[in-house]
Image 1 (cartoon, rainbow, N blue to C red):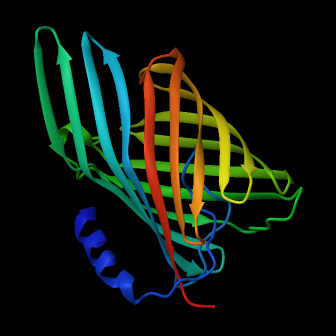
Image 2 (image 1 turned 30 degrees about the horizontal axis):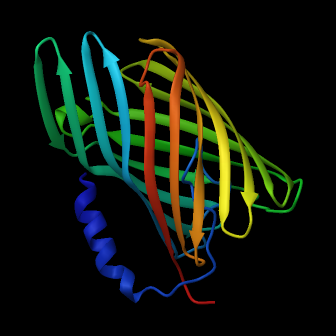
Length: 256
């Protein structure tokens, strides 16, 4: 399954779709929104791109990824998602050599379940996401095997300007599990801005523990477009020393 034909067909269809009130976007930050899209509506969340810097075994790798998620509201508490990265670039240096590679990453399909979706102050909401990632990416940008993921996001809103979440996830790849636990603390600033801080604690069965910390911002333009920026820095363990990115999210729906 290749994401590029699906995205091309989607972009050809979008001029015929009327706009409606926007939902919560999954970008940025750890986890995902605890609500789903209304039935028959779609959203595209696109990295512009993301960046990772990692040093291991005498090599310094810089990776750029234009990650995409296409969300489709199917009705009720269910949402379908199609994800992937049509463009990636790797720049590698070390041991007297350097090389670069470009290509596409693996493709994923996912189903989100969000039974409540209330935005009332003080409300607790949650959602779960099950995902399968297929090993169809280029060698430098794929897992090399099918991966299964199951995650949940739990959200508390103490007020109309505060939002706290806890994200938990497990990825199973080649018979090994990677666990992630990430609290996020967000605040709305004015009518258009949202800022947050987060910490990601990761345990990999092969590589051990990793701790990342950072945050980001999101800015709404009108009712159906969001821009975002984020950055994380490794403060303990293995893994990338820097993760950062820009993104844009667009909601397409039915007229009210």
